[in-house]
Amino acid sequence: MTRQSSIAVAAGALGALLLVAALRQSVLGVMVGSMLSSLPLAMVAFGLGAAYLPLAIVAGGVTMAVMTGSFTLAGIYLAVDAAPVAILSRMGLAAMASDGKLVSGTTVGRTVCWLALVACAAVVVALAMMSTGSEGIEATLRARLDQVLPTMAVPDVSPGTAAETPTVGASSLDFATARTEMVRAMAGLLPGVAAWDWCLRAILSAGLGQLMLTKMNIALWPTPAYREFAAPSWFFALFGATALAAAVLKDDAGFIVGNAAAILGLPLVLQGLAVVHSAAARAKHRLVWLTGFYVLALVTAGVSAVMLVGLGVMDNFLQIRARYLAPRTGGE
Image (cartoon, rainbow, N blue to C red; front, side, top):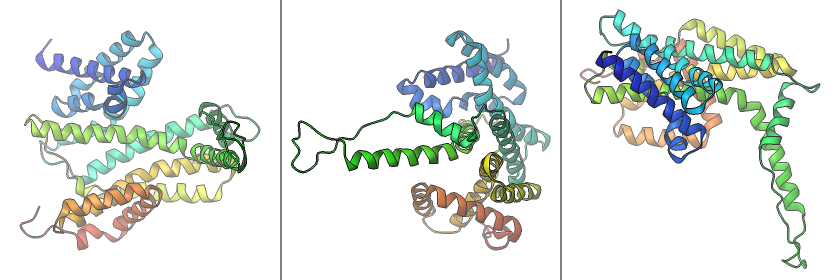
């Protein structure tokens, strides 16, 4: 076995161990493994080449099966870690085809769009095949979440009531109402959020892996032009058609298509972020502006996501970056 092959095997095993730690809810697993268990695979893809990725994936799957004694969990490893990294490794193949030149933002955007499409297809199939009751998919998800989430009774000490004998009053009723609304909201968002998590874990691992490899001077290819991220035009048409269908359809069909539209919005959000970073690159104190932006975006996540989708759509049709945010002469 060559040195590169040994590194690939070790990396695959390490990624599987991080996922095992996450599944066992250890401190390390929750802090690191839950988000970065796919990082070793990404570093193999962009540090050794996509040819070594299958070897790392097999090593990870075997490690997962041995550590947990479950082939089902090994399959989960393949689905949640190996599959998305394998899709993103297309960027490495594109870099190889371009003879080591910088991977364009269009190539990155196209690859992320395929990642989102795979996630969307998986969620649509899973929801369509879900065993549901007479009230539909969303009601079934609410019922399952209601069983999983803990219930709490909030005591209410009414005026004139002894503290030792609390009675359940308005506050407990308010809590029950709030819990019901929370479960309803979670049921509506859960499929899309799960797909976003699946995509973002791989994207984060790929970006962080490329950064680490570049810092160590062992990256095979230059860092992609992230600020030039651009989804292909056909993807905007697909997103528009899906969003329109989600607005028209009702019941289970509307629920499924609505979640599909939310998943397909991820590449558009990333294109909107690319516009924001391009604008920040022209300003003084760039890091201050970006820090303030991300803090605000996290506080108003829902509204910010919609606005970033709109910004991404505007950039596609109005070419905002090319017309107004082109780098200055002598700039980056």
